[in-house]
Length: 154
View 1 (cartoon, rainbow, N blue to C red):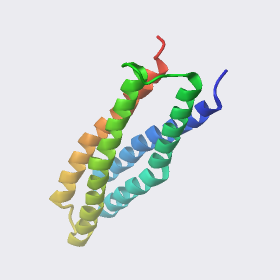
View 2: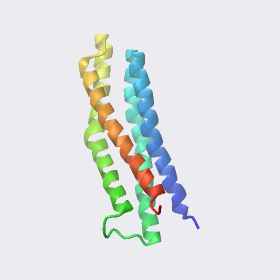
View 3: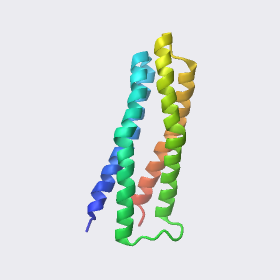
View 4: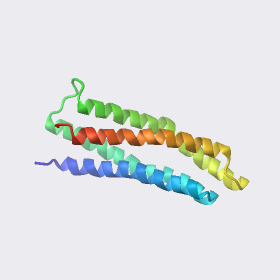
């Protein structure tokens, strides 16, 4: 029998992973297009989407995950799929809070300055490059966690 928490957990995963993939897609598309206004709007919308989708998804994942673990009697003793998943999830959170959020703020600031200057500034390019590198890492880690959760009993 499936736990009622599983639906909430999967909803959180969809919000979390879905947003990090789609937000990156729209930001990269704006960068490729090269339109300064589109770049600035995309940078702003990535930040907004994080607060509207990523953060609530994160909360749903954590709360429902804890409730399911308690309900099923999982322990945190030893090293297994859940402890590895939690470590990777924590690392994802550190990357998001310590690196990606400050870079996103920088991209918003630099894209606004680029609008004023009439050209895309090198500071935006630098912040965007670092955001892409760390964003790929912060996206791949949840995919690994998803793999671990799906194939935990295989």
